Each structure stands twice: as C-alpha cells, then as structure tokens.
Length: 58
Image 1 (cartoon, rainbow, N blue to C red):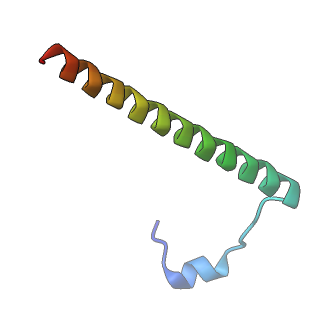
Image 2 (cartoon, rainbow, N blue to C red):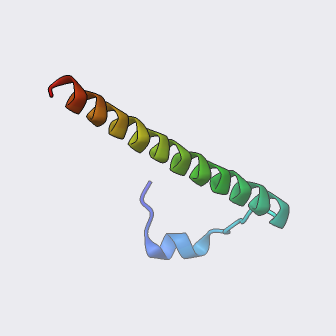
Image 3 (cartoon, helix red, strand yellow):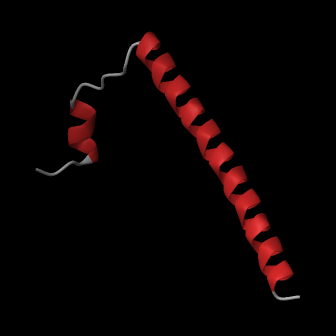
C-alpha cells in the first residue's frame, strides 16, 4: 500500500476528543518533568563520582 499526498487527502482524519487531548498533554508534561528530574539526579551523581575520584588520587 502506498501513501501519497493524493490518497492521504481522500481519507478521513480523526482527532482525539478535547478530554483525551488534555489527558495526553498531562501525560507528556509529567513525562517531561520526570526526564528533567532524572537528568538533574544523573548530573549530581556524576559530580559526586568526579569528586570521589579526585579525592582518591590526591
């Protein structure tokens, strides 16, 4: 099956309801917050690792 611009314009395009869009948006916002939180934690752990290695080889 080939999808071309001509065939794509013939089909119906469906969108989720407003409520479903809100739920999806909230999910991705929460996911973004969790990713940011884990990135900060990772950076903190990298700094701790670097500090410990510096102290170990002094």
